[in-house]
Image 1: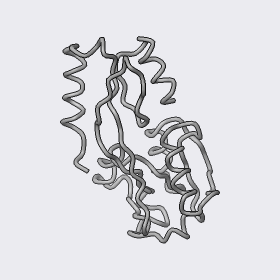
Image 2 (image 1 turned 135 degrees about the vertical axis):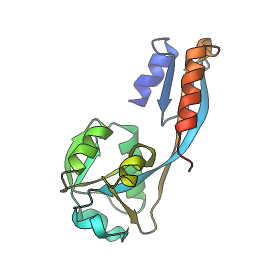
Image 3 (image 1 turned 180 degrees about the horizontal axis):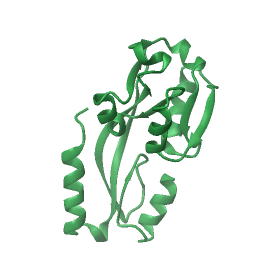
Length: 170
């Protein structure tokens, strides 16, 4: 998906994008937005709902709902797990939307790795439970990318100001 977004920016079909992969094109200006962590979450009623720290070895015993394999978030997750020797986790479903994953998790049978910034409110409100994984942090940088021709656009500037103001402190 990131490559498609980068192409849309480079060809002028999009003016601004938030992306995990930093575009490399002379007509695209890139600014860091925030550092984010993919966190393991489940419903409070899930078996892990009372667990604060999970040993890495237990990761392969959970049923996951994850983003689709082509998403940059999933690629980051798969690479990080492979780096620690986990090559196959039980995936119950692959879904194209973080919001849909949260809805599925609320039913209480699955877990997922999701962006902290996207689930922070649900964790705070008790809709989701964050389970720390012993010795594992999955960090990524998110970028604001825009066409250089859009550099002085007041609407884009206002949007960027708004998302920077609402970004959680990491």
